[in-house]
Length: 219
Image 1 (cartoon, rainbow, N blue to C red):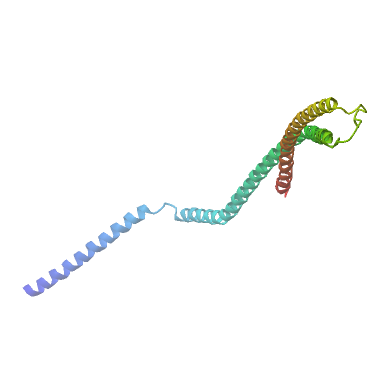
Image 2: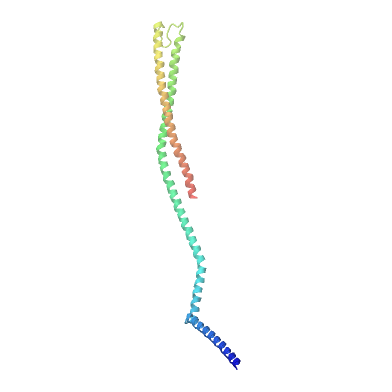
């Protein structure tokens, strides 16, 4: 009957569709097979070798990193050592220069000290002479009643007193002029000695500072 025929047709159509699906699956499998290597075992072996190489490299990387870090530390230590050596050489050069300066300054300081001593002695001597001349001039006011000049032994007359006063006044003026010059010379010697001593003290202080700095660089 027509119903039976239709049922058979429907069954055949379903089988045809199933066949087409299988045919499509088979075609996809063929395409996938084309993408597969010709020798899967060799491909697997190569993949295993690559994996093992990457594994070994992963184990080596930390060692290489530590080696690189150590090399960097050594490089920095060498740079610090070179910088410290340059600093020591600079300090040594300054020390040599300061030593030379001190060798030049010390004789000058000794000369300045000796000049100051002589100037002080001359100033003191000049003050003594002035005081003696002033005392001699004042002595004329204490000659009342005297018959003979105690200075020269001559008879003490008005003319003699006048002449002695003139002479002793001149002596006082000359002594005071010499004292003024001696005082100026003494002051100049003091200033010169202070300047040279300041140079010496500064150089000596700089040398002591360099010693401390050099000792610190050696540690």
